[in-house]
Amino acid sequence: MAAQPDSSTQSAHAGTQARLDAALISARLDRLPATRTVWILVALLSLGFFFELYDLLYTGYIAPGLVKGGILTATTQGLFGTTGVASFIAALFAGLFVGTSVCGFLADRYGRRAIFTWSLLWYSVANMVMAFQDTALGLNVWRFLAGIGIGVEMVTIGAYISELVPREIRGRAFACEQAVGFLAVPFAAFLAYLLVPHKPFGLDGWRWVVLIGAQAAIGVWWIRRALPESPRWLARQGRLAEAEQIVAALEAKVAAELGRPLPQPAAPDLTEADTAKGRFADLWMPPYRKRTIMLVIFNIFQTVGFFGFANWVPTLLIKQGITITTSLMYSSLIAIAAPVGPLIGLYIGDRIERKTAIVVMAAVIMLCGLGFAHSTDAIMLVTLGILITLASNIMSYSFHAYQAELFPTAIRARAVGFVYSWSRFSAIFSSFIIAAVLKGFGTPGVFVFIAAAMLVVMAVIGLMGPKTNGLALEQISH
Image 1: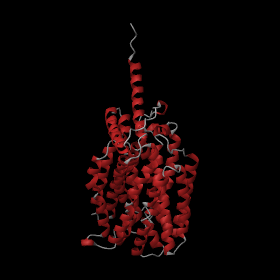
Image 2: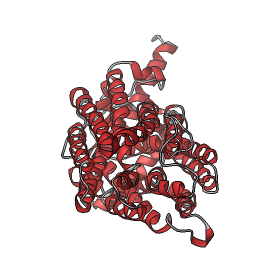
Image 3: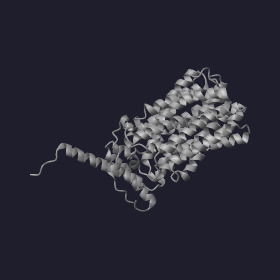
Image 4: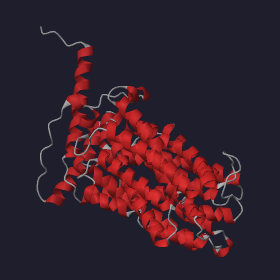
């Protein structure tokens, strides 16, 4: 009689088969041509990102209205005063820090689709309440709570897109997400230009800007219905039947659009399988430890350049001698460039190595920022502001794609949340630092501070970053 395999052998065989099935799911997704069905999924996720960025980036545009209304002050009494614009910005980033660092694991545990939905509803409700606050404390508390929901959403969307789309278009998919998302910037800026200096129907203009953004909740259920769960996440959870059903449906739609059978998927390679156990400790195991350290440093400093300009541009222009109304008009012109950077990415997103794009754009931000600080000419200010915005947003889609690629499915949302949370943590303090530098050294001092931060970004990504373009997520993980 042949010997029966013991339970440990059977368990090992079952584990190997599960990894093989999960690897095959990934290979089938990666070989999908980028047809209309694939891009519709990207567009739906991008709509969620639009609401998120509107909420995140209207801060700078409503700040003059909050100051004009006497709720906040332009400068801060003491480094960490709680009644200035800096405290309002800091409250948002404190919430973002909690959302990304403490709650980032939720999408790994409960799925990308569910957390995408509920986080969007969370911050929409928080903003509706915030719109009716009349004190600095009330504003800051509800801005903090909204920030938690936005932070969770940011982590989830990055993981969601990287896992749904084929590897050959990951860069362009993130560029599309950011192009749609950054349409919110000129939209918010133009609304602020129209509304903030006035009181439509007796309600402060800045309140209208907040309430319009909060209506994201109306469309969230429609977006959710059309989105499948991430098959990679389902497979990693052992829910292979559900993953198979979703992938088979995608394959059928894509094949129908192509009018021919799909190419065969690559043979699964178990040496590139996701072996992470979903623990925080996995971030500190090779090869992820070096990537974690690199991205923590990067995120601490990149946010100084991105939000140091985006959140402060109307205030910086006023400091240059521009009136509040003209400042908002110039800010609106600069903001029109926000979605153009990612639109450029639809062409170059998978042609230029992502780490290279990050380094080059950081250099552009540094040089144009220094020029902006020493200019008083209207045309030059707007031109340099547009160039800074273009560079910031090309860097943005590049690093969002990059950090989502560097970790395996089991810890992707947790890892991205942890490393990205340091940009939120940095923004809490950089807001106060920029306010203090602006008060003591004017606009030139602010941009010297930003230039130093961009030098660190260039060094850490250039020296420590691996290449990712065109590689399967499992290959990058291995």
